[in-house]
Image (cartoon, protein in one colour):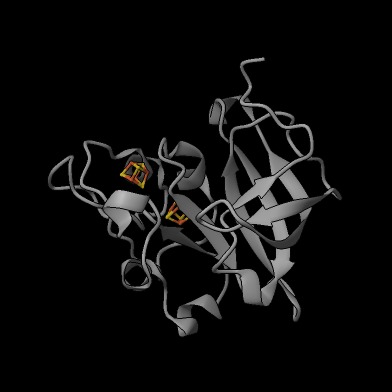
Length: 168
Ligand code: SF4
Ligand code: SF4
């Protein structure tokens, strides 16, 4: 039950995951935003018009995956940390994820971190490829993380050694 646990069910995810055919074409955003809330920066941030304009500010975002190029601007602009980019074309053995990350310290390229699932449970290891943290992203960095392909739809967060919530 998403409402009581905050963790989407298989049925919830089936609504928002791209087809295997689309995933095989390259990076694409996955919007795991399941509640009707007054929020739309994902749509206004997208320069590809891949996220359709909201008729009502409370609408849930609707994405046209064929328009999406996986740039991750929406990832950095989502206050709910609810958007992730998945690239299944990264390599034969690994997928590349672009994850929002707001804790400190930021991981460094080359660092191996603990990969967490949607429940915050460790499910394996990921390798940090790149960290984007320009001033325009404010406090939401984007961590590019290589993970085993079979974990691409499991991993949605990371744990970095020595992390804090940024207030200390
Ligand atoms: S990843 Fe880029 S192109 Fe795709 S929906 Fe987000 S902002 Fe738009
Ligand atoms: S910005 Fe994030 S939380 Fe707000 S509507 Fe878009 S996906 Fe949902």
